[in-house]
Amino acid sequence: EIVLTQSPGTMSLSPGERATLSCRASQSVRSSYLGWYQQKPGQAPRLLIYGASSRATGITDRFSGSGSGTDFTLTISRLEPEDFAVYYCQQYGSSPITFGGGTKVEIK
Amino acid sequence: QVQLVQSGAEVKKPGASVKVSCKASGYTFTTYYLHWVRQAPGQGLEWMGIINPSGGSTTYAQRFQGRVTMTRDTSTSTVYMELTSLTSEDTAVYYCARVSGKMAIGDAFDIWGQGTVVTVSS
Image 1: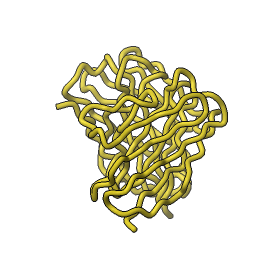
Image 2 (image 1 turned 30 degrees about the horizontal axis):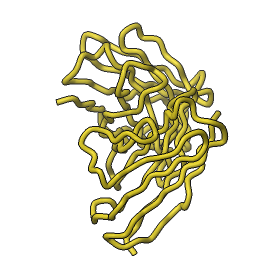
Image 3 (image 1 turned 90 degrees about the vertical axis):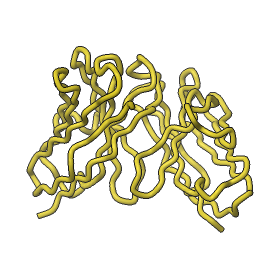
């Protein structure tokens, strides 16, 4: 099983700032099958990034993903009020599919 | 539009079973695999398994083997997830989610149901 470790657990930032979220895998993620999801309270997760760096349909270019192998990053270039949420990484290249523990981006 | 609509909240006693439904619409039901994911209160996301709506084949996460059954009804474009021998640790929001492509493993989850709250309490 691939274990995904996200850091930091929580980050406190102000609107307009840049957020850099990390996701580290315990072993290489096949074919960069790594996704990022945003979840707001009381809502289902929403796909932001797939294939480590491709934005999902309708996702603003403020969100970008990078990385390969075992180290991946989600960057939010300029935080908007609606971006404050919890973000999860997911590897879907091998079974069992696994998620990271999440990073909460909160308003400073 | 493409959507997954799940059944309503459930309250169950320890030892009981729960069956959650997920009705698909807006696309060809048999084309895309569907996964189940759960989220305990204040916790992260946990993958439970996958079903192929076309043939009905399933793969379950090891920790749920023997306790979970995923089925589908192609006549109503609905998948079901039944979990037995419930304990308080099964209290969670249960989500169904559709893959974005044609692969069981290898495609991200682009469409999610709204979630079904299952509470296990005596």
